[in-house]
Length: 202
Image (cartoon, rainbow, N blue to C red):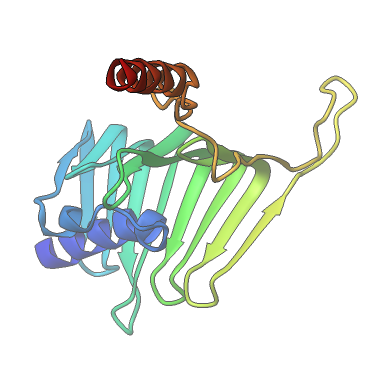
């Protein structure tokens, strides 16, 4: 059951962000898991972690009130994390930026390689962010779907999907535009050249 547990936790973490170019070295790091209680049921091939659950593996951090991991008959791993909210964060491969997300419930289906975020869901990569009531990513089909949810008169803009996508060529705050060449050095060179010609003529 220990191998099932480690494999299932690894798949949960990698499944959330693997296809978003997550830090590759994270897969080789040990999994650290903290919770108030742990219940393992070998007969049902499930393990349940409850109470301030924190899973860490390299740069990946998952926080939840509860995490349930199970293995199906074919050996595929499935997991559900719940919280108010449940969150994940992981560094992207070769970049100094993170992929992170949040929802009331996050489900990972190992058979379908699909991640689903339910209720008050959002996913952020660098400065790009998408909000919806439901976010789904199917890694096999490379297909994503975001649904806005029910409208509420008390919350303007509810029931809609919201995305903020930054321009790809946007200069970073530390970068400054290249300096324009000044005309002054050319004038100085001409003056020096003129002075040299005048000296030769004398």
